[in-house]
Length: 492
Image (cartoon, rainbow, N blue to C red; front, side, top):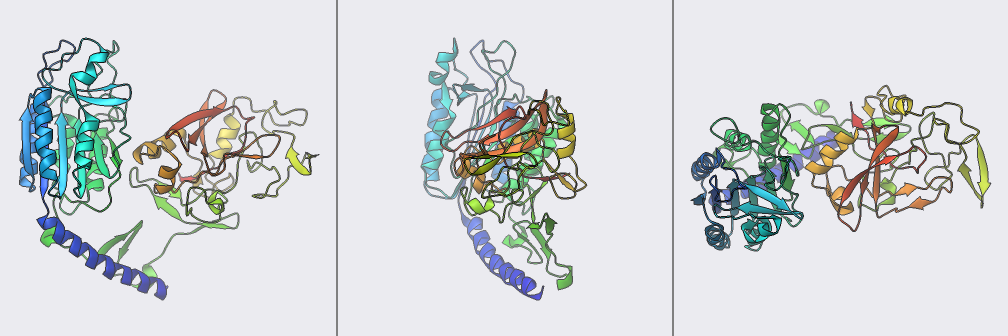
């Protein structure tokens, strides 16, 4: 314990020195913003909006008070928006922090996002790309400036002017490496223009942006929560966070951190406390020792590795962190008991197959052959078993298999779109592949990741697939007779 305290103390001193130097740099670095608000449109397909001008003016004033040089425009034509962008990006080449804020109509078309000018003349969807400012152009201009950090804030996810249902929303951006982007709502959803003076998203940014010494991602964690609560859970902002380093809209007082409180990853350690009060939670389950990780997006607690894994991943194809494989159709501990290099457990009823043993029954369903004993066609019994938190299920005591909603929430918040992203996330998810039913062979190890949930779709089970090359994630349903995949447990 003394060694642990000494290590933490030395890390703290080092971090304090580094952070102090970084904060001194932040005090002098350039801050530049481009703020645009559009609420009047010539196109019949684009409705007049109530709050974008109020939003843009308030954001301009707030950013100026926080040390930004602001380029500003309201009710601009597409050509004028483009001119402002060129001036803004040219200024960014001197370094520092760049911020782009847009309030108004934003439209998604064929997976790309477009910001509407007051003269955007939309007759049909083919006109969108030629009658608007492409968001990717904004992002590319900012990235190519070579400055330290770029932030994009979009209160622009109104409605699709070509949708009879009024749906719409913006799409996720795939080319925003090294940037922080905040959307007013989740990809594909529609944001509220607000019933008061401001759009709800902008209002909550204005309420949180002046928090002294609060890092950028924490500011927007609070923004998400406040928007979600104010809209009665109808609107949930979404962020893409791929920045390296830190940023404070309002620097800590005196430009220094308080050394008495230091965050070291997920540890919140008070250095004034005695050494015996410093502890790291560990969980022992089935002879394997786990730690926990806290989501920076939702605040939920997860195991730090897959069930049965020997260690936290060192890469997405690190076999030591794959863990065990579980089959939706199995009784007892729910474990897929094919004979393998990963687990040598063998089911009660087995038969040889080319020198290996394979399962010949699925205990929970009557679709597994003559040996089935417990029928659970609707999946309710299996679901209840996997949701147990008393330690009798497959997860440690106090933990359970997550719902598909909980998995989606973390995946979308972390901007995970392929196996490398999954490993780089706070969960360090590996691409453990899956075990094929009846043969016991492994499939897609080191390429794709598969994760169980407890959410039913009729009698089927939803699970996550993290793809390797195609850069996408999907959610599929498992009939209970399919192969075995991995599990990551969440605290109840």
